[in-house]
Length: 141
Image (tube, rainbow, N blue to C red; front, side, top):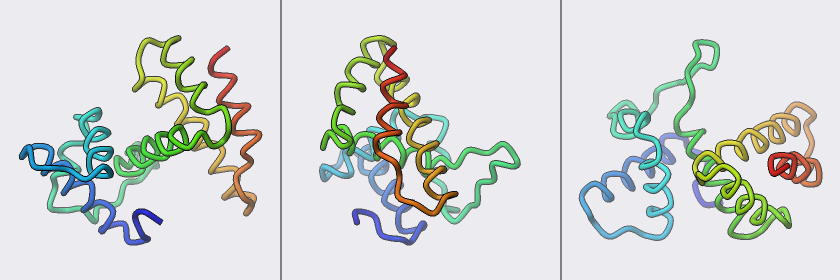
């Protein structure tokens, strides 16, 4: 597992990677991926640089958890890099071409990933890769 289970440790990784990017310090490949995603989300920069990394984000109050959102971007990128489920990298390529924006394409794919993860969690099962890929392929039509 790349990140471990401690959310503050994970959030500190985002903070450290972003600080290194801002300082123009050398980045590990993982830090480069993280800081690329942070750079795409200026609305989250205050959260990433905050000294209060233990903050709770409540969807009831309309708050988006920036670390969860950016983590889903990283998840999509990992899936595309490994082409798992098979065909996901072509979905990203097609969707990016269709939308003209890789960030917007990832956001649409994140919605499919989040729905698939929610279903699996609520049913206490493994995520259904076939159904997930079908959702993703619907985006390209």
